[in-house]
Image (cartoon, rainbow over all chains, first blue to last red; front, top):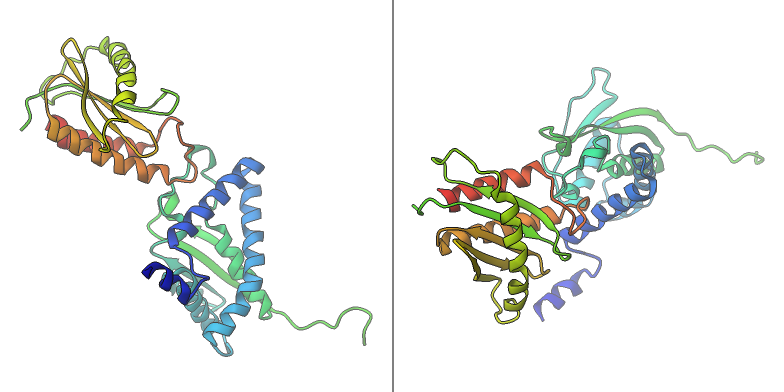
Length: 179
Length: 142
């Protein structure tokens, strides 16, 4: 009875373990389908990109973060989003001297709980979907960034680290054919 | 604590295939007789029928002693997914074996949550072996 009332509060919430296991079988199935680790990495990034494009709207509606005036604001918003959607608090660090690159550092990665990478796919970027989400979300707010993993706890590193690099600001282009 | 004994531990899958095997010998006894491996597998396999019979008689996962062969006792533990954990031992050590089974059960659950592990396939993980070693030393051979 009590569990029903909990779920009635927000029917869209699922248990973290269900999410982790679903993502795990997604990656395992992709690996079986493509068999090539690089293809799987690329697909995960693309899937993340599609998710990010849609997630940004939800984030803007829920958190109402306001405009970003420079990359540091953007980094803060990304930090907020991780907290909102994954329940983890990453730290932002390792700013490049020019201020156009930074790292999102995760002490724990909820998507990779219980996972051990098998020997034949050590090049797999298991959480590559996250890099895609960052890229997709930023692109929808006219910011082109590159995001990639530079450290992964599944590969033996201490933390999981995503590097984000600002490429350029996207201007709204008038569609071809219109004046 | 426990009288020094030899133990052979095996996790058996649904098709009577060994998923994981490990032997534990007391720390002081160095010379290992290699012939026993085949005998241990044979005894464990023969005990599987008895395990399958007795798993329906009780609602416990720990089945205690199910079989005896010459000087070897066979204890068994069945998980909810019908994965059988078999332990061959030559000394009685009910408490130690029960604790060992419970810990290996938990370790097995955590391992099977790995999306890259297909159930009933052999367990090759070094982390799993390390845990088995550790718990074996803790609860079985002391």
